[in-house]
Image (cartoon, rainbow, N blue to C red):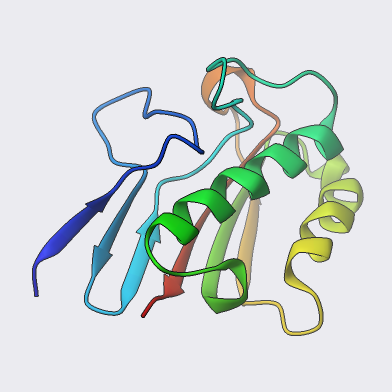
Length: 127
């Protein structure tokens, strides 16, 4: 199976030597997304809720560019700068996955890129 690099202007450009996503066969693997605004390349203003919203929109854009969607996500890994933000993060995250959310791991990270409060990566099925 050939590896296909996924790239979209609807998500932030990579800030290092990595791809926004990679599709292999019927799976797409995303890079961890922080709350960078794709238009400005800057971290969005606001707290954990605003940042989580931007992260989820970034993931959604990458998945759609790969021929997938959030409802086809099979696993997420979530990183929080502070686990005290978990309830507020969870409220926003939960709106994006509805009644059948994928399995996930959530950990507190000592530090996230660009001073972000949250980072999420995922694996999803695609056509």
